[in-house]
Amino acid sequence: MTRKQALDDPRIAATAWARFRRIMGWMAIGGAGCVGAALLFLYWWKGSLPLHMAIATILGVWLTFMLGTGLMALAFLSHGTGHDAQVIDRLKDEVPLDD
Image (cartoon, rainbow, N blue to C red):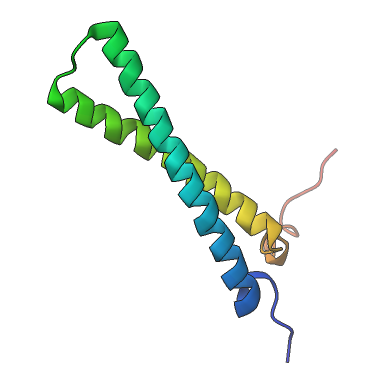
């Protein structure tokens, strides 16, 4: 029987996902700060904002911030747990190495 590696091991996976959720929680707070900064800038630049513009700004800034943060956090999670090392390159024998 082979030893479980990376995210296949439940203890490693639980620790990694807890860390991911903690990072995302802090980044959600950071995203809210960015939303506040964007709304303050728009208020300073244009004055009072229409409701739909405020809602679009809130959703656009926060979701963009969280998407970028989530993708980067998943990349770090994958690399930090050794999950990337488990990938088998099935095409390495088919690619010619012409130098």
